[in-house]
Image (cartoon, rainbow, N blue to C red; front, side, top):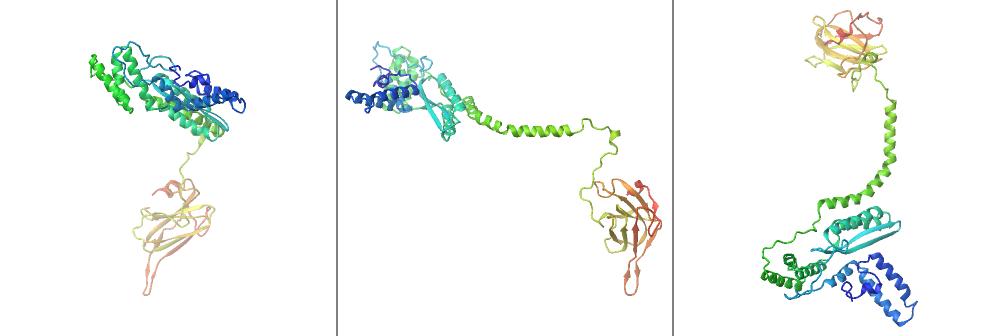
Length: 437
């Protein structure tokens, strides 16, 4: 048997020890068609069919194949000091270079087509650099071709990329054999420092035989002059954050592209609507001269009929009554001022066609003013634009009458019209004077 094929499994299928999983599967199917007992009834064909079936059952399983490949590196005892035969160190199955700390790894690539999804192992003994490249290539193929099968496509794609990002699937038992084999190989080559460093790793092996022999080798090398404080080898297998980011980027690349494609029409519609809105706006804003009166903020919550807009009265007790009937086509604001000083006691709102009254005026002499308009200013106390303003010509003196049996309050009633008519003849008033507090 070849050292690369301890039990002849590869030769029975007619493939090389470096053959891919697809090549092994194709070779087995071709041989099975020829040697199946239903086709070839020769006794030798039956035994041959059993042999290839056994070989395929081992080589088609990544874990079993890795353990089988490691058999070629089984050499638990250290060679004697005078051994002249050299052992070749393990080489990377991808680049072919010697690697001091090899690993037998399995990466997965996923390819899907609607209802058919295949997950293919990519297996070999790698150096750390080739392992990272192989993992990235497997994740790239999975990210492009793995999503398109139902239901296993997305599930296997996500699982495979995460496994590849973490360094692939490996066996600690196989790794211990590889490291121990290399310790002996570098010893036979006369590279004692590397052999000692690898023996330090092997002394922690779970395989007791390897751990014991590793301690013996360390003692042997120390006797040969290797310092016990020799530095250990740097671990090249640590997974960096950048490696994770690259694999995760491949993982989300296709789903992100699909989401963007799905939303593309909606985005275009929104952009189109915004463009239409922008085209509907005037291309040039009017100048200040063209704009006319600047926009003044309006009262957000217009008052109800009879609402008091301003009250500077200290007493809220019932007093003299002023009743206003608004017979005009516009809303009105009525103001009550001190006849001698012009001091504003109160103002209230009278809606068009409505009647409102103010009934807590104290004794005194008053002048009554009013104005017509539509919208109120933001403070809800004055009109934005006054259509007309006026005041009643007479000064009214209001007094409370006290009799033996009761108290009588004065009551005045006026009807407002936008033209000088009605029960009084008003005096025209300037808008600025009416608005003054």
